[in-house]
Amino acid sequence: MVEVRDKVLMLDCAEGTQMQLRKSRVRFTKLSHVFITHLHGDHCFGLIGMISTFGLLGRTARLHIHGPKALGEELDRQIQFFTHDLGFEVVFYPVETTQRQTVYEDRSIVVESIPLEHRVPCCGYLIKEKATLPHIRRDMMDCYNIPISQVGNIKNGADWTTADGEVIPNSRLVVPADRPRSYAYISDTRYMSHLHEQLMGVDTLYHESTYGDDHLPQSEKYYHSTARQAAKVALDAKVGKLLLGHYSSRYEDERVLLNEAKEVFENTFLTNEMDIFDV
Image 1 (spheres, rainbow, N blue to C red):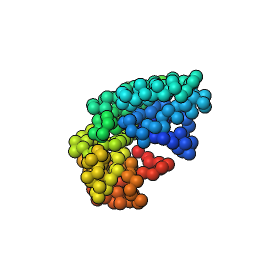
Image 2: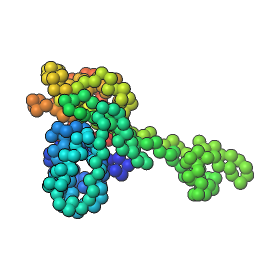
Image 3: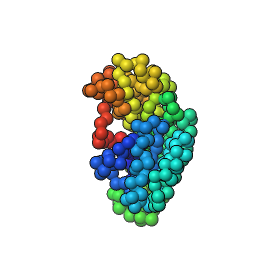
Image 4: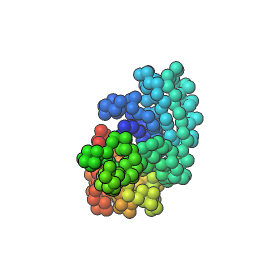
């Protein structure tokens, strides 16, 4: 789940998702968009159950679902077969997984797809805030008796001229806006040496790290990444921090993956259920 600018977005929807939503106390009604990376069960089996539960709970707002084209027809069949009088509209948007594209945009954020290489069509998602206007300096507004009606003009770069003809430059009336944040979710993929070019400067990167160095052949065979490879992507992309996940069940202690990643990129963290990270 990604909370940004009063919106709640979901990235993939595995079996048991609705139970985890209850545990995390995320309000079902706040979820507006679901982004599916690929059609393997551990990334989408929870979708129809969650949709059905939303209907039983009386949801009326549209639910927007983005994912590989093949998901659309299958999801429509499941909705018709398993639900009756759903009470809200499920809107599906096919995503072309072989090219980078904007899959969602509103006044405050942009979500782009990132092509990945897995055993089935697959993409990651990059969520970016849009730049905001600078902040008004209330002390300067009061000092020069600037009326509230001029706030919009000043935020958009206007100077202020006093009654005596003195021009107060805009730079003295505002402070810079907060830097837009960005979060990249890189789902199942084999190591791609050029992937970092799509992720330059991202604040927080989640990158699958199914295996350690001890199972490099398996990672290549099954189109997954090692923790060290995920760290290499983070290093080359100059990201702020790296989150590891999607661990193979063969590891009883994932710290072995963390240690291997940290040898390449120090600011790396393991993810676990219910963890919260500030982008």
